[in-house]
Image (cartoon, rainbow, N blue to C red; front, side, top):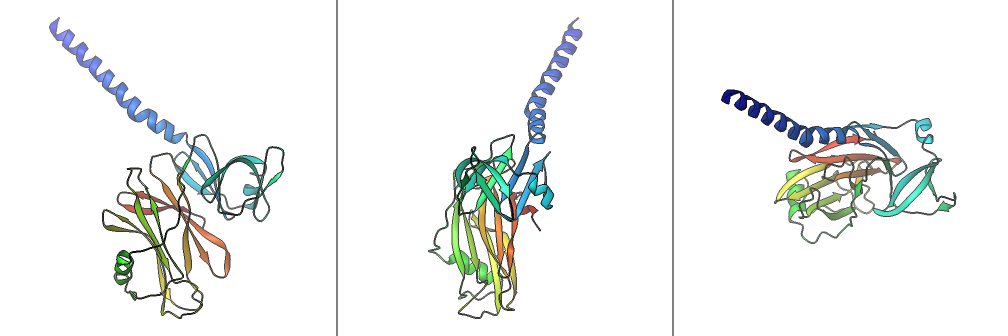
Length: 259
């Protein structure tokens, strides 16, 4: 009789433990698999996220299928509200009465079965060149280089209540100087360590290169870590390169690109 009670107690414990593990892990996985969104970035990029996988919508027919669909819209990382979108070479916004709505910044719009946390950010002047010179030297570039873009963005990328510093430096498209090398570099400083996002260096062949900037910062997959959309503008190409970066395992990785 005593052994039977022990067996029953063990069985109850195993069942209870299994239930707790299912509630802790199984439901979380189910929720992750149910995440479903369409993300529009600027005029060149439409991404979908479903069952933890990203993919591009590249075809014109696929993009036009989104016409007159309602999206949550942000302009320069500031929320505008819910509007209908319509595409013809670029995106146009309309209110519920189908009146046109003006906007002039970086468009970010999503339609999802969950709320996406979009972080406002601002570009700041770099007042201390210590990390900039270190990165230039590490990449065999002149530490006295001139720049066509040089600024930083402070972001709490991992939501630990401490901002990380992101530096964006470039000498792409120089007008009044002629460098030997063209470079565009984006990197993060966290705990005095340098993490590279974008690093493009090439010989100067007149207006080559690609000048990067942050287009959006958002928790796209709802995992409490922000992703960053880094866009890169080329001198002779109106279509920008958009790259969705994710920070995991102490490194930045491109989750998806529109190229």
